[in-house]
Image 1 (cartoon, helix red, strand yellow):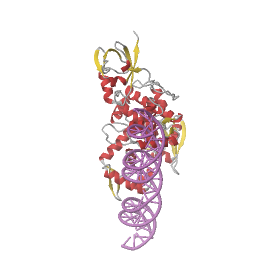
Image 2 (cartoon, chains in turn cyan, purple, orange, green; image 1 turned 90 degrees about the vertical axis):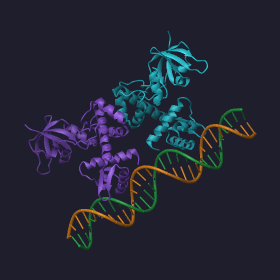
Image 3 (cartoon, helix red, strand yellow; image 1 turned 180 degrees about the horizontal axis):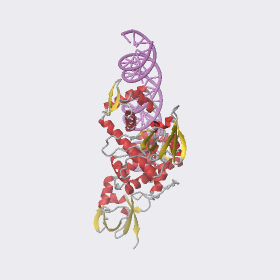
Amino acid sequence: MSQRITEEYLESIGTLEESESPVSTTAIAQSMGISLASVSEMVRRLSDKGLVEYTPYGGARLTDEGNKRYIRLTRRHRLWEVFLNKHLDIGWEDVYSDACALEHVTSDLVEEKLAEFLDNPDSCPHGNPIPGKDLKSVKTKGMALSRLETGQLARVLSVVNEYNVEFLRYLTSVGLTPGAIFRVIEKSSYDGTLTIEADGMTRAVGKEAATLIMVEPINE
Amino acid sequence: MSQRITEEYLESIGTLEESESPVSTTAIAQSMGISLASVSEMVRRLSDKGLVEYTPYGGARLTDEGNKRYIRLTRRHRLWEVFLNKHLDIGWEDVYSDACALEHVTSDLVEEKLAEFLDNPDSCPHGNPIPGKDLKSVKTKGMALSRLETGQLARVLSVVNEYNVEFLRYLTSVGLTPGAIFRVIEKSSYDGTLTIEADGMTRAVGKEAATLIMVEPINE
DNA sequence: TGAAAAGTCAAGGTATTCCTAATAATTATA
DNA sequence: TATAATTATTAGGAATACCTTGACTTTTCA
């Protein structure tokens, strides 16, 4: 199994484990766009390599070793995103794919020096936390925007689906970028569509989108 | 042919073409450490892809397209070296291998932004020229240290074999890094060994090593 | 408990990249 | 210029990696 593919599986499993654990082979197959049978086979191999704990029909779970590798990749990915965004001046909408490539060719030394250079940032341009050198797992904070009630004032903390350039462009256009403060003007009881006010402008945000935006309510 | 392997062949051929063109399959095979037969086959494929001009028994030569890709790789490689050395504070002895990996996953956008960020440097930490955005080929300037005569004052311009960590460490230890000024104290007529004075210290430099150091004589 | 859903297994396909051994072309040398 | 030595190519195939399909098994849940 090539390093690259191994890492792609670890990322897929690791990400999925954040919402359900263990992860079903079906979930992995869907997220990677390959057949169920392939996943069965590959997951077994990852298990042979000690990166995944796998029981037939029981789903997969990263081992400590697999999890460390997953977290290290996340760390590298997000460090690169910060570099690309802050220093190379590439928009937050566009840093994902380059970081995706860079993370796989980052040595321990470069990771360490890059983190120092960036002054050990604790979150990426999408607001997601950057694991530390200790590789302890980190969790995204906050609640989904969709759960806010009418009248609530809140701050955008982070955004899920950071690979979706269109989505991020849309968020930029409605002013919902990490750090932005907004108020829920109205929440439709019919379909959950929200009307928000940010930057003095009023905008509609669909329920789907609102699920992917993590926020922190602000008490007045 | 995978992108990665394609690029490795382009680099090998491009580098070898700097000393002789066309390049024999034997030379490629030796530089890459693989069999002659494999090279024959791969060179033909590169030729099918329009990256190499290849006539059986006549050696290989990069096409314009192949040359552009080779120069672009060189540019990316050396830009990363500057970044790693100047900004991440990684020694000039050690930047090569990381740059080697990074160069293959660098998008046009990142290349451009990185060059701007670095203020369009014109040479890498080993003193080798960085091709410009126009991808015109560039040549290393200067003459080999080994060709200097006794008494000559000179400046180190660049170093060949930048992948040889041990060699670079040795150069650092004798003070022969790019920019250093030194004088040839003696040149052995027997085996070409040189005695030089740099930084107030006297050191011996073997003929082999002296071949790999490019210098510029200074008139007094 | 039995149908639907989820998962595994077996077998095989394709692509990639390398190798060895045999052959052919070229070059050097006497 | 004939022959040896060198250099290069071709044929054939091995190893690996990753994926697929289709048959079968296990689990889930109405």
